[in-house]
Picture 1 (cartoon, rainbow, N blue to C red):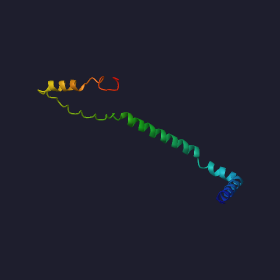
Picture 2 (picture 1 turned 90 degrees about the vertical axis):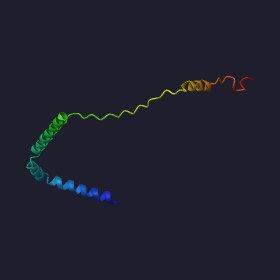
Picture 3 (picture 1 turned 180 degrees about the vertical axis):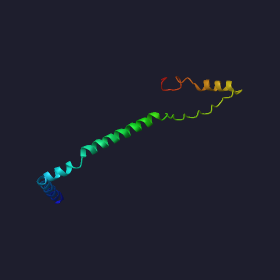
Picture 4 (picture 1 turned 90 degrees about the horizontal axis):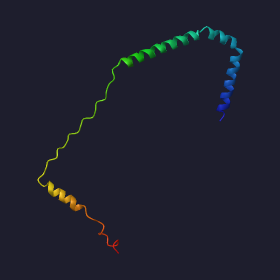
Amino acid sequence: MALPFIAGIALGAGIAFAFTKRDQIAKSLGNLNLDKKFQDGINASKATITNIKEKVQAKPERKKPGRKPKAKIETQETPNSQDESNLKSATNLNLENSNPRINQ
């Protein structure tokens, strides 16, 4: 439970130490040429991005292969095709009079 308290004391001590040595820290950071390094990094990333764009644009677009068509099943005309049509008409019953409760 005391961990946040201890972390706060350590952070405060680090800030106080940095405040007292701020002149030395500014000189050491000024010698690092960070601005030049940032600019070099930005230029390198821009070059990389343009290279990637050129590669993508130069690459031909691949098309996905389409699905293979299914084989069509040919229906054969049977000699009993007239019987099938009679069977279909026989199954279409007139259901109006089939319920005896409605007729009451």
